[in-house]
Amino acid sequence: MPEGDTAYRAAHHLARSLTGRTIDRFELRVPNFVQFDLTGEKIVGADARGKHILLRIGDHTVHSHLGMDGSWRLVPPGSSGGLRSSSGGLRGRPARIDGARGGPTVAWPATHRIRAIIGTDAVIALGIDLAKLECWPTADEPLRLGWLGPDLLAAEPDLAEARRRVLSQPDRSITAALLDQRNVAGLGNEYVTEMCFLRGVLPSRTVAEVGDIDEWLTLGRQLMLANRDRVERTFTGDLRRPNWVFGREGRQCRRCGSDLVAGTHDSGTTRSGATDRESVWCPSCQR
Ligand SMILES: [Zn+2]
Image 1 (cartoon, rainbow, N blue to C red):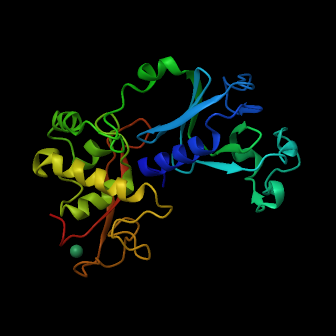
Image 2 (image 1 turned 120 degrees about the horizontal axis):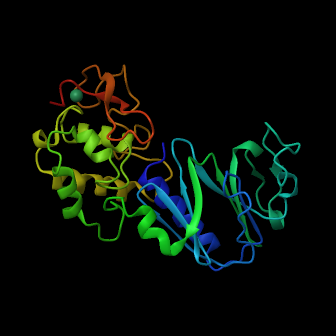
C-alpha cells in the first residue's frame, strides 16, 4: 500500500525523468480539469510531502495522492495515439507498446485506469488509479497543503513540532495520532502497525501510555529512510520476510511464536470515511 516512502520514490522518478522537459501532451481525466491544459509549459520538478505528490509545471502544480492503489508510471513516447479517446478500443485489456529505439516493451494499463497523461518528447508519465488529482497555482501550495504536519522524509523534519501535535491529544490512541496526517505526514497503516510491534505496544494504547513520542517519531523516520529507495518495503531487514505482523493475521509471531491477533485500530481520520483500519498484533510481545 502506498505510504510516504512510495510517494517519495514516485516524486523522485518523476523529477529525474521530467525536470526541464517541455509538455507536449497534457490530460487530467478528472472532473473540473478535463479542459485544463499545460501543453507547451516546462516541467520545473517534482516533490513529495507525506503521501502527496507535487509535480510542478510552469507556475502550476499537479497535486496527486496515490490512495490505496495509485501509481505513476513512466513509459516511452510515440505509441499513445490509441489512448487519446477514452472510449477507444483498448478498454479492459492492457495495450502493449514497443519502446523507443528498441527499448523494452511496456504495458500500458487499461484506459479507464489512467487519470493523468503528462507527455514529453523523452518520456510520458501516466497517473494510474490516483485517489486524488488536481491542479492549482504553485503559489497556493501553502494554502492547499499547509494543514499537513511535518514530513518524516523531509531533509530536516521538525520532529519537535510533530511531537507537540501528537501530545496535544494525549487520550487518543497512538495509531490514530500517528496516522493523522495533520500531526505528522507520511505514515500509513502498514508503518504504524509495524511500529507498534517494534515498540512492544498494543495498537489500542493511548498517546499518554506509550512512552517517549520522540522515540516513535525517530523510529518512523528511520524506517522510512531505510525503505524509501527500495521497491520492496521491509521492516525486518529481510526482503523474504518483510513484516513482523502486518498482513500476517492467523500466523505466528516471528519473535515468540504466539498466534498473532487480527483486529482493527483507530485510523485517526474520517476523511476517507472509515474510522477503523485493519490491524494485527502479538498478544505476548505487545502490551
Ligand atoms: Zn510475539
